[in-house]
Structures are given as structure tokens and as C-alpha cells.
Image 1 (cartoon, rainbow, N blue to C red):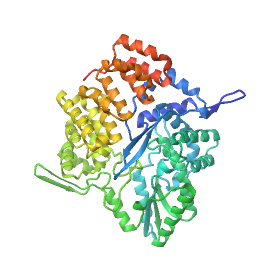
Image 2: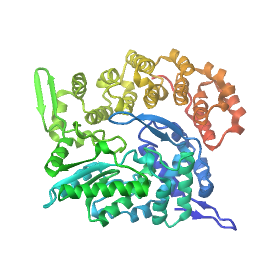
Image 3: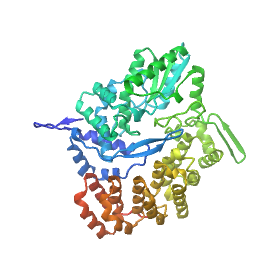
Image 4: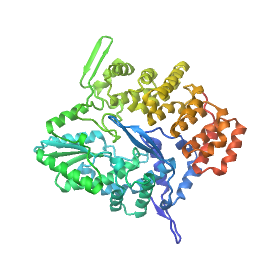
Length: 552
């Protein structure tokens, strides 16, 4: 809870609970769902009670100065790229704490949960670090859509969503929505100051992939929900995906016109024409059913499986797909293995998950939603049997590369030394020669293999890779990898230029330089001590605690 200090010039500060919840949430779910979790959060946790939290509690919300963020291109389904922003870890904690402090009032101002109109991101935090009600799910969106589509008198459904929603949110309209909902104006102004600093010369766009941004987006969309209701339309919504249920095509056309005009005139937003259509309710219900199914046909040991009950997250047809703009989409949704239908699990258990992956990849028939679910299940079991097929097909699996790399790192101790070296060699080959290596986020995820563990060998290539890399994000990961590989001589050579590096890379150097021998490390850390900010000092102390990671 925000509080003011006493005196003639009272400052506004967030409370201990705000910051502690923010860190707990980030530790549980990540700072963004698009990029690897920065190592800095482990250093922050290590020094949380002694240094970082006391520092946060002294900060005036109204005078916070944002630190440099990273802007990285990530794939956008079904094709293309979009810009993702990874916030400085201190900014990310502050931003999350700030929005969570406003969240109860933002949620209260929204169309009530009981109306089942706005399904996405309904705020209800708990002590475990969760932000959302468990009923705020894509499945609930589908259930609600079915209920309305089967009502008497409903014959057509308008399906549409907003083009480039997060990156086009107009700051002025967001600010107005927040002022209407939040009683503490200083918290709103502080939030807008952050967004303005990150936006630079433009007055629109909020960070993509961040939980706090999702709630701000809902504050904007609530006005649209209210306007549609006031006009007499029946609709439900998942983030920026609208479904309006109509008695005839004329009403659907009126709804689309009203929605398009309201979005443009009030918010400067537009509907995505390629994903806007009006369909008969029968067709719509068939689409919903198909989205819930993956038809698996696998030939294994002479047996043919053809089971329409084998459900993944969805099958994309020519006429519809789910955009990765919304993290909680269907085809790449986070579905636990045990949540798959019983018939699905029995088939997969009978035929071996790794073999199913291999066959579907060979046939070019793997639904990536199902692929993600299976890879996560293999990771949970610490089963390395699909590692080779995953690394061999890494380009095909590029949209779920984070799961592939996390799986490989998680089962590394179950792999032989030659297997690890082969994986490392393949990853470096993709970095150098595959189009995936030219993708900024793809390169970061592949390098995360080496940044997380020294197990994948190929140290001889790392220094060269650092010299030839043109992107700071890659250089950062390579430095972390070289630290894991105990390449002390490289850090000895580079130490005098380390503090001139960009902030993200400087922090990586500070952490990775723990591989230098004891006296040299202590002397260098001492020589730069006065130049370190609160986060960098936490990293220095964490590096001393961790030491060099031994090869496993």
C-alpha cells in the first residue's frame, strides 16, 4: 500500500508488501514470458532483506528514474516479428509493485466478474504470487462463447480483435482510464511517467509480456466493454479478442462499425481486418470444437492411431488462428499433461512421448501447442529421451524455443558428455548458419544453453563468438557462458573496459568475472566498488557467494 512520509514535503512510497509481492510474482512467472529470466533476480533475492528491499522502501514513487530497458525482436505467430521490451530488474519490480498497488481499484471499476463479459486477467492476488483468478482462462472464454452462441435468437457471431494492441495503446487514454478508477493520482502519474520514459518520443505503447501491462490494458478495454453493453450488444472478450453475438448479419455489421469507430476515435486503435469475420453460429461452434482438438495419426510398430479425441490446444485452419500477441492463446497455451483428455494421455503413454514427437515432426504434423505440453511433461519427468529430436528440429520448434532450451538444460545431468558436446555444437551451428540465429530472441535462447551451464562444452568458440557478435544481448549471454566455462584469462584481459559497457552487459561481466582467481577477483571488485549501484553491488556479493559453477 502506498504511504506518504511526514514533513513539509511528503514523499510517496510503496509499502513492503507491494515490493515483496512483486518479486514473488516475478520469481514464479518470470519478468516477461518472451525472454529468459535474467540472472539478476537471483542476486536480488540473495540481498533482498539486507539491501534491496530497504533501498526500495526509501524510493519516492514520484521521482523514480527508469533505467535502460532492452528491446528485442521476437517471433509473432503466424509470421513476422514484433518488438518486446525487457525491463531493468529494479524497474520491473517497481512497475509491478506500482500497478499492483492500484490493482484493486482498477478491478473494481471493470465490468463485474459475474457478468462474464471481460474474461481475461481478473485481478485476485494471493500470497503465492498469483495475480489472477483461476477462472480467468482461455477455456472459460470458450465456455462462455458456447453458452451465448447456443441461446435462442442468436444466429451470428462477429469475431474480431485489435491490431498491434499493446504497442498502440495511447497513453493519454490509458491515463484517463486510470484517473477514473484510481483514487491516488500520484500513483497514476508515476505509472505514466514510467511509460513515457520507456516510450521515448512516442506517446503510445506499453511493455509486452509483463503482468503489470496486462492489467493496464484491461483498464483501457473496460471502456470499450462498457460502451458495447450500453449500445445493447452481447459480447465477451479475451484480452483484445472480441466476440459479439447477434440475431442477424445486419446487427453484426452494426456492431463491427460501432466497435471500429469507437476504437479509432477514442483510442486511436484499429481492428485487424484479416482476423475480423461474421460467421453463422453453427460454423462458429464447429470452429470452437476444432480448436479443442488435435487429430493424431501416428504409425508406430505397425499400429495406426487415428483418434479425434486426442486433444491438444488447437488445430489451425486456413480461416482462423490465434495470435501470439495474447499470451494466453489457444495453440500455444500452457496446458499441463494431466489436463489433457484421458484418451489422449493413454495414447501418448502407450506409444512413448518422445517417439510421438519424432514421428509428428518427421511428418510435419506437430501442433506446437501439443508439442509444448509434451516437452514440458518430459522436462517434469526429467526424461531426456526427446533431447536429440528437439535439438535436431530446433528451427521447426522456434516458436516454443524457450520450452525446448529449458527442457535441455533441465535434463543435462541425464546426458552423457558426448551428448552434451553434440548439443552445444548443434546450437552454435544454428547460431552461425541458420535463419534462426539471425532472430534476436532465438539467438538469446540458444545462448542461454551456455549461459545457464558449462555442460555443453565448445568453450573454444565462445571468445570468437563474442568478438563477431554485433548485438549487445548476445554479448551478454556469451560473457555469462564464458564465466561458467571458467575462462578467467579473458576476463583478466577485459576487466579495465568492463565498467564502460552498457548496463546489462556490465552486470553480466561483474557476475561472470567470479571465475577469476581469488586475489585477482577481490582486487578488481574492490577497485570498482565505488562505481557500483545497488543492483551491481548485490551482483558482486552474489558472485562471491556462488563462485565458479563446476562442470557436471
